[in-house]
Image (cartoon, rainbow, N blue to C red; front, side):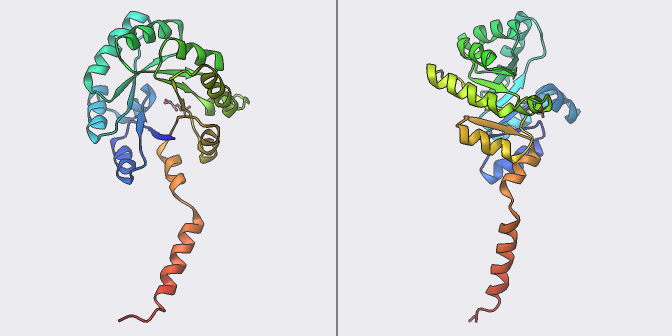
Amino acid sequence: MKLFLDTASAKEIRTMWELGILDGVTTNPSLVAKEGRRFDDVLREICAIGVPSVSAEVVATETDGMVAEGRRLRAIHPSIYVKVPMTPAGLRATKILAGEGTRVNVTLVFSANQALLAAKVGAAYVSPFIGRLDDQSEVGIDLIRDIVTIYRNYRFSTEVLVASVRHPVHVLEAAQIGADIATMPYAVMEKLVQHPLTEIGLARFLKDWEKVPKG
Ligand code: E4P
């Protein structure tokens, strides 16, 4: 399973990249806005770290604008995946961009049928937002189960990128289902690393080691 950071912070990305556990990055306009810098500069800095997959979202709402933006973003760095919203215009843009060899991440997916359509037009990734479904009293992880089943039934090559992840149990459940990727905020990835019993166990081992005769 691939683990992505959902952030536009180069500092956060560098930290996880150095741990060796990071496979990619997803950004969105809200995350880029937090950085207070030009989008292209942020993207170049992230790509220079070496992460092999960096999703960058278009903000045009019509097909032509999405395609033009997608081509421009793709040209910035070979690691860039163009993120396109799940709308009729987005489906048309995905088909065109994917046909040209651009890897497209279809985002803002909230139903299994939307995911089916994204796969049919050649998306490289589909991004179902599970946390936002949980917020609406729907069980977000159930959507992942449905999409994984549908993609397996028809052998679609589109990868399921679990998005809007809010806590480690989302990651665990996504892994149990067999989702390809989970993207999460830095704070969630940090929690995957930590366990209080690891800390306690290490402290005890080091304390006991002091009693071992040396020399
Ligand atoms: C994914 O690509 C999105 O950027 C992200 O996961 C949205 O998460 P949120 O619902 O926490 O904003």
